[in-house]
Image (cartoon, rainbow, N blue to C red; front, side, top):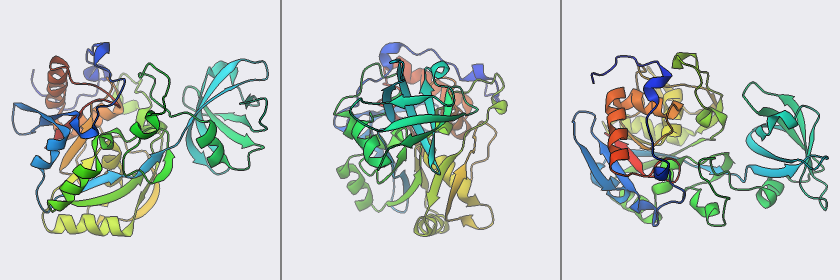
Length: 350
């Protein structure tokens, strides 16, 4: 199959995936998950383990990680009728939250969600949002939203993990370097790192730069447009410190490679990169949608998990590695029994 110059059809990103390849639990230890190494200038693939990542790095490279921390964003409650409902908190908006609710038909504006007859706290649905099941919600009778969420909320495992969250998920579904709370999903490429591996990488002369992108609806909202160019990403909050921007610009000046750990890092770095001034510090919202035809300016290598068919994340990877190379890599991964999605294995695109 020849490389499509600009594959814009959603069907170009659909691939068959046996259900048994969808990981339900992570690898232990974390860095013994598998790693599919994809050289953009070669035909063959390399089947390794994640701790072999260090073999592909060199002194002077810069690894960029996302320090966001996943909150217990999944709240299970009930209406005054007793009907069971679910609220997934996505992003803090002033005194309210953007959220996804299920079943959406039962939670119209004005509805209230309760959590325990013994507790005074409840959620009120304020308004509909554009996305399917999207609502603006607010807490009431709640002295500390953060404490309430951590105490009563559940780890927001993705729906393709077909089991309730367990105590182990509180650690497993969090990177070892998670620092600032704010995400409704983990930046999953980072889940493979152990303290030892990260230390070994730094000892090898590789710098580690820390940024923030809080994962929300923009990352995991499905693409429903037959022509993917019609898809609109929801915005997510990012932060790039002055020190991070300085380190990244220094890396570029000395000719070092910038290695993005995950698609959230890619979207952040591509958002803050200026063609004339380099990486710029700051915070804000990004709704950048990257698909084939995009010209990358900020990164040289990418570590990523295997993504859902038809997802915007798969389109980003295809933009970086080429559509045909990416789809060939995914076919190889399926044939070799790699584990897919959040708790699955990883890819390294060089």
